[in-house]
Every structure is written in C-alpha cells, then in structure tokens.
Length: 111
Image 1: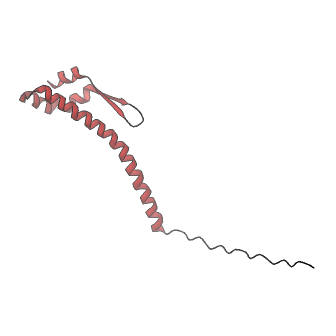
Image 2: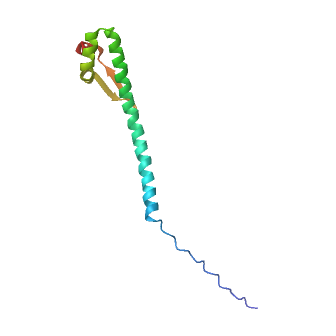
C-alpha cells in the first residue's frame, strides 16, 4: 500500500500593521519625558547640595553677627561674592559634590 502524502497547509501570515504616526510620536514623547525627569533629578540633587551649603553658611554668618545691623547689612550685600571667592567644591562620588569653606577668609571678606 502506498502512503498518500497530504500537503501541509501553508500558514498564512497576517501583515503586521505599522503603528500610526501619532502612536510613534506618543511613544517618543514619553521616552523624552522620562529622560528629562531623570536628568533633572540628578541635576537637582547637585543644586540642592549647593543651596543647602549656602543657606547653612548664611545662617552661621548671621549668627556670628549677633544682631549687629551694620554686619547684617554688609552680609546681605557681600555674601554671594565672598562665598564664591572663599568656598571650594569638588566631586565626592558619582553624583555628589563636597563643599568646603575657608572660614577665616570668608568672615574677613564679609566684615
């Protein structure tokens, strides 16, 4: 007896639908938003450190003035310049910065 070979049915591939232009645009928009959030998060960490350093330095300087009006007025006008001149920052780890202050130079500059 001879065997009859039955042809196997050929699977019919359905054409893959392309995503619409709006769908692709939405996908890329979501990716860009996520990247923007991540970048701002890490840069925000750095700016928060600098702001915290500046605010603690200002608080310490105001405390050293002990309520003297002339000292507080000078501190208000010269603080940013003196802080820039007498502070230093360097990398401490991948995303952190270490801020140091030359206290004697800073306080002599402010007074």
